[in-house]
Image (cartoon, rainbow, N blue to C red):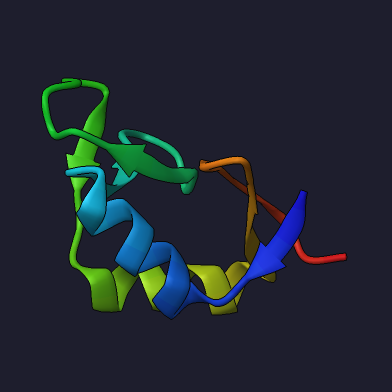
Length: 71
């Protein structure tokens, strides 16, 4: 998996119909289609802020994206 910028991750997510989400009751974030009740949809600005604040990076491989600690 290769690290990608938040802007590239947002571009890919939009193409796939994904939104940024926060796992309710935690500070975990992930991409969602918005239909999962466990997740609260957040703004892209908040998504960027959470990535930076928590030292996270979006990684991509073959069209799959995963949010992990920055290496």
